[in-house]
Length: 119
Image 1 (tube, one colour):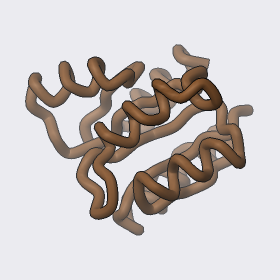
Image 2 (cartoon, rainbow, N blue to C red):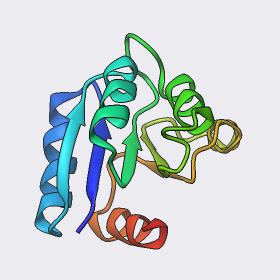
Image 3 (tube, rainbow, N blue to C red):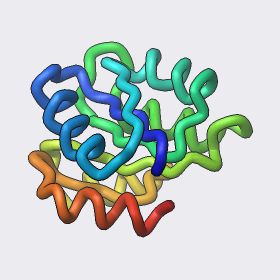
C-alpha cells in the first residue's frame, strides 16, 4: 500500500486519521506542522500527503504551495483535510496545488476513495 504523510497539529485528528489509513494497509508517517511536513516530504518521500490548514508554524495553504512548487516534492499529491468548509477555502487550496479537499471529520470510505483515486 502507500506511504501517507498526515500533517495536523491535533493529536486526536492524527490518531483518528492514522487508524483509518492503517486499517486499509497504508503506512502512516506524521508531522505536527508545516515546517516538519516539508522536511518529512523531502526525507521520507511519501506517496501522498493529507494536510490540515490551521497550524501554528506555517498554515496548510503555505505548506502545500511550497511542496507543490518544489521540484523534489511537486509529484506528491496533497489532499487538504480541514475543518474549513467554505467554497473559497476549497478554491484557494486548488490554487495552491492541492489535488483534493476533505472536510473534517472524514468519513473513512470517502477518505480512502479519494486516496485511491490519486494513487
